[in-house]
Image (cartoon, rainbow over all chains, first blue to last red; front, side):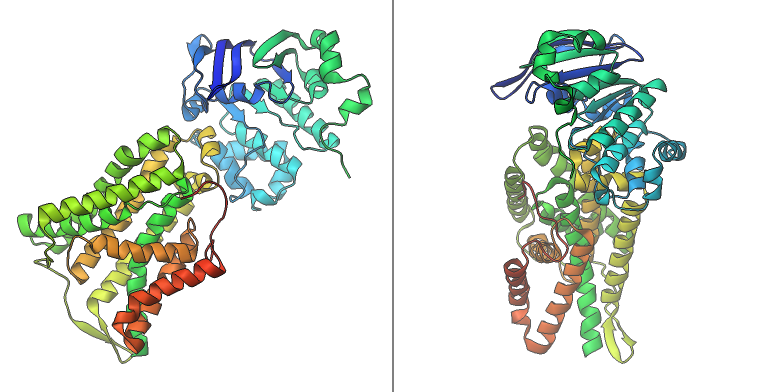
Length: 243
Length: 291
């Protein structure tokens, strides 16, 4: 469905993407794992049209994806960016309305979002900046779904969240996927990402070094030692310790 | 005397508000001060004057013509002065410098073309005064007040109630994330310049009618409006209106009770005091790369 060929991107002299090849099949969850600075977010920003790659191509159903964010959205590819980037100055409901900017009638989308996330409905008139981290992530995902995307790009959705909330987020991603949305999931929390993905890729220094079914990737020796850690309990506690 | 000066001050303040909101709108999206704003004001007054002098001395038509000229000027400034820099993601400081350059260049071009001579609209507003609770208030001041308030209310409604208005508000928080929502941010920025141009046009044509038309009209007035916007907190629309009214009323009272020659001095004193006490202004935001 989405096919990336030999993608290169450099920030000035620093090469962030060094010939990325990636394929996303319709209906799947594809996880991209890798260390900090491997180029995962750069890849996402290139797909979303925020960054213009120096070379290579991004194809959606065989057609070149346009190079501007608003045009990418109109093709049904939506990025839920790293750090959520919800609009703190707007209410929860207004954030959802912004997500549906390209949709004519936004009321059904808002209703669906509130069905999926009852917590957001309770806080619909509240400023989004007052939400907790987990709620903000839910809002960011709900906002991304407002334009009825075919492909949802999720950049580090578990970042900075408590383990229990991370589980919620993963469950929601699965639910969204089961409703027919193809998901490209970038995560540092490799264990969680691999547990819900069908296929996965491993990125190192701007390159995809491994790709295949998630089950195989999570059994790979080097992936286990580099990204999953030896003891299961140690890594699965995520990035942040909860008080 | 008091009431008269108060109404006078609010009237002047409402014109400052038109201009200050223009500054604030652009600042809220792009985090830089559009110093080319001045020229849109001047060119509106000249557009109005020349329309009357050359085509027809019909006042409403000439006001509309002047406003239209200002909008076109705003579009030109955005497309040819700022957009090339925005596309390159230039530092905000460079945008501000380009704006200053555009303003100085255009003002001097206008002096060359039109000379520094002061002009009076062939057909102006009535100069009558009316009596409100014993205060004698110029009809023109009331007209200016009503038109300015109406314009500001329309802009406020547009920003609060429409889809594009919501996008303007979201991009004031985060322009890049707004693009991810499917908003064509280039078009949104242009829209904001059109609104700012419209407000500058209204201010310029009204000022030309109240005072006279001269090449530094815009610079003089936008300096005041800029003070108002900074006092109110750059980037905040309610702040801009508040600062503008505060400035207008202060000026009016200083002129009446102290001396007209102290009027401008007080404007700058307010600015300096505000910057010393609260640099972000009454209702401003403070972060990031700004100019």
